[in-house]
Length: 237
Image (cartoon, rainbow, N blue to C red):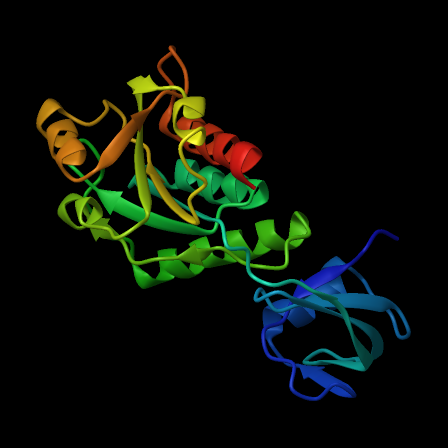
């Protein structure tokens, strides 16, 4: 059996962990079909992963024993935050999943002139968090990316990051900037379907967003987001 990982945030008793969350119990019992004495790994999303042994499984709970810290990882100094416009649900799901796999540190959804403008409901936010956690689990990461509050374009302009970029066909190649710095905290945003308009680009430049070229071709929003995160992580991690 391949390595079985489960997200479980609070591990206080290292000798005996009782899991009563119905989603986790369902996953262990019905999806993964684990049995007594099977090995399972618990990660807390904050740099720690524990190895444990299944002690007992019932309809409503799972008890684990022999809890041992398996991996410990300090948070990286380099952080890459992705700003993406509000889109149709399936496109956001794809962005969250794939960029988590590629190592993004955090997400900032936003709305602008050519994006959807309805703020996500509490249920939708919970769903996004589940997608992020599952992608973290699947990709063997120890740190879960943050999901920050959905922002207006005006708030995006004022975000306080060491370096800020906007992906555009009129930008410069990434190596133009790599020669000048290795920043610890980077924010990159991608435009909506139909792109930012002229006035928005003017405001972005006034607020110290550097234009970066991803491709000479016109990219879908989700393609640009995934490529941007992969590109920055490849060169700067």
